[in-house]
Image 1 (cartoon, rainbow, N blue to C red):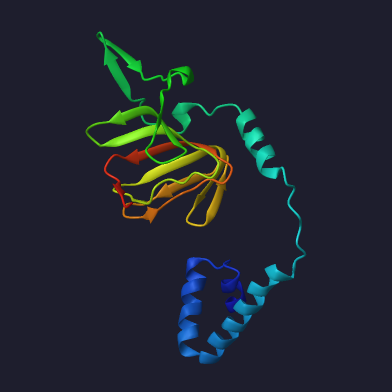
Image 2: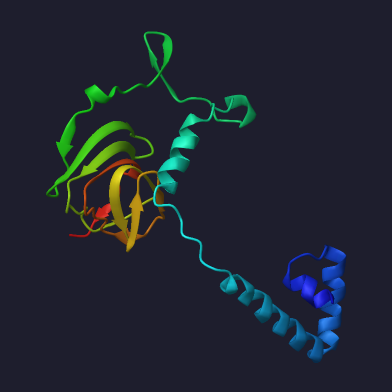
Length: 196
């Protein structure tokens, strides 16, 4: 019976050790455990499919937006990065009307710089891809983080929509594109290598 509970992942450490010892001594018990594992794994596929409401994602994002903010002290957030100006310490604030959109160098791709760190060689920016535009093929020098604010972005065959987050690892190569256009918040390395 321990074999069944192990497959269900309900054994504590001492029971798991006792079962491991029994399995080493008895190939028949191991065979029984494997049969139970196959049977239990098949249970999920016997349940009827339940259709998901088409607006579920938008309703969830709306509910999340309506939640009261969590106090910063309860989640141990790092201190806010600030800039010093005239002996005063201030947070960097970029107003949406002050963003200067510039062509990125690929048709239909625009960039709006928010900040950059010269020492780390990182940029935080908004990026807009017009419908049908693609970002040039490139290799990441460091981790890149992208949050989809509007529209769709196709990365490595996966379609991402509003509220989706993409983290690309150093050395990864891709050429994201957008079918309907998108607006992205992106933090990336200035040392990425363009491959086209």
